[in-house]
Image 1 (cartoon, rainbow, N blue to C red):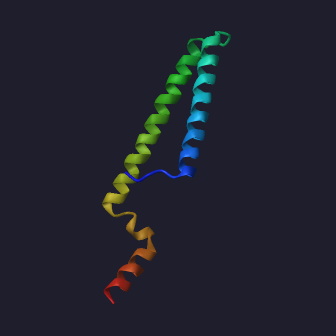
Image 2 (cartoon, helix red, strand yellow):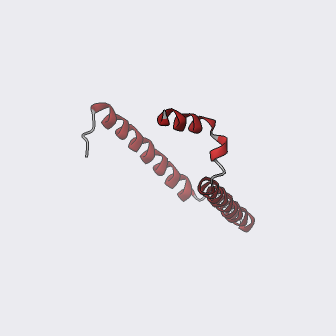
Image 3 (tube, rainbow, N blue to C red):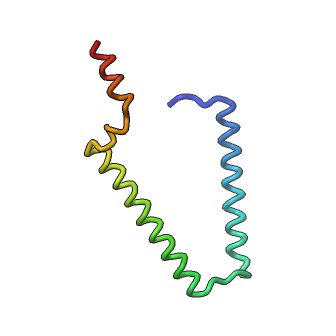
Length: 88
């Protein structure tokens, strides 16, 4: 494992500090009890999460299918030029 430089260590500390602040803020807001979500809000949250996952997984599956079936080869004109340059 490569050693981390000073800049990388400072960056990691800053990122973990931002993460700690975000988590502590979220926990504070969650536990205040001032904001209540009724059943319609929970249904909307669940459906939104479900359909976001369905769309995301579907698009990823289409991307992998397209790449494996060769449909992306025609959209990359530079690949053919590089292959010809290697043969010469």
